[in-house]
View 1 (cartoon, protein in one colour):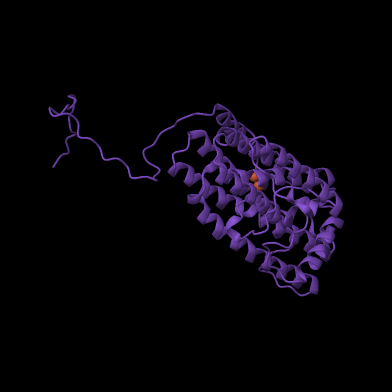
View 2 (cartoon, protein in one colour):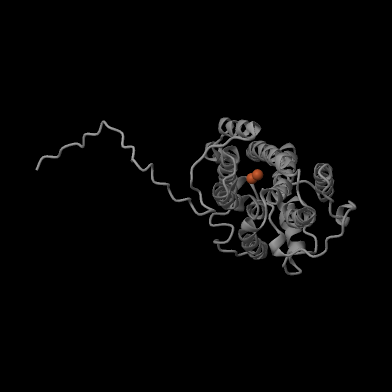
Length: 347
Ligand SMILES: [Fe+2]
Ligand SMILES: [Fe+2]
């Protein structure tokens, strides 16, 4: 039987009117819409597309394992494995946040900015992957550790990822619980921390590959920070006191969590054995000696203090109290109970 294309030139207008369509139960990504409330966010999304870069195009062949001692290779691998606890979780964190933004019908540029951060974080994650694989194939977990240093590195990383896992469970539950402004305050901590970290390291690194990598990643992080600030400027007015308290607590949680990569972890939240920190220091020192650009303990403390003072000034404008950070001589509200459910910040 030959097929005949249906002929239709007449519009159907039912005499009793169109049938009302069912409302989509929410939260749901439907109905589709492209509302723009904050043109600045749309601009930032455009910028993210123009500044895109490819970690695979880096001259990785100039990062030669034989240019480093065994200890230095382990040190760099270890540092990137620590970084991956933060930067490596970025794609999953922001992918979830992107879906959440769709489901709660945030304006279009917010969804797109989240997506761009997911994209960027995937690049940052790839950097961790490539640096680790180049210097310690199979690292960070799946290589045969023969020396004590290698065993110490592997064990520390295992403990670190145990804590990362605790944070992931908390984060997953928090998405539906808090308004976007609360989540974004945590992101803000992460972005301030990461832009500070990578800017400092790009200046200090002596190996050209690391120098250039930190520059690129730092540029992305600065854009993420701009996205966060723009969203918060819009969402912070009208924040209830209850949420303001919650934010104060989360700022302290951000400090506790991010100090692992920015400086040294305080004795709160982290479940780590006693030997963790001494071994961490030894491994990071090897990375430092290798020209990775890891700042000294004092330089890190200064940088972190300056970055936190910046966050304190920003949140202060919106009447949000800053937590006490006695570790860095910053006074504020006492926040002593930090659990995995409080940890949201990422890079
Ligand atoms: Fe970021
Ligand atoms: Fe990142």
